[in-house]
Image 1 (cartoon, rainbow, N blue to C red):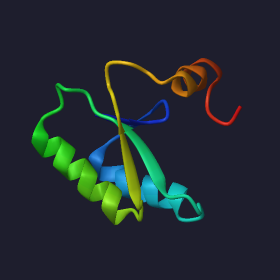
Image 2 (image 1 turned 180 degrees about the horizontal axis):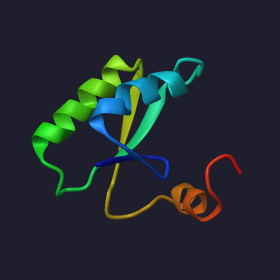
Image 3 (image 1 turned 180 degrees about the vertical axis):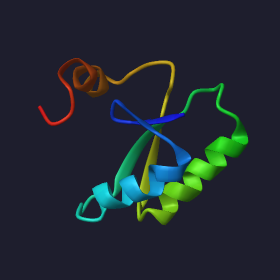
Image 4 (image 1 turned 30 degrees about the vertical axis):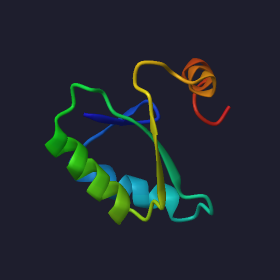
Length: 80
């Protein structure tokens, strides 16, 4: 299972949700954290969805440690 911000994101709805979010954005970069337990097939499917949603760059983040800005986002919620 993937998450978009704090919401669950499944493979069936991921492309539509990501396309809706990124279509109006000038900066089309996605920050992505993938658990080491996630199998390669799921990773490949998700990367295909990301690419077909119009996202131009993907920043892969270390799963073992949250960056400071992400810790703040988890604490306050998106858009605050």
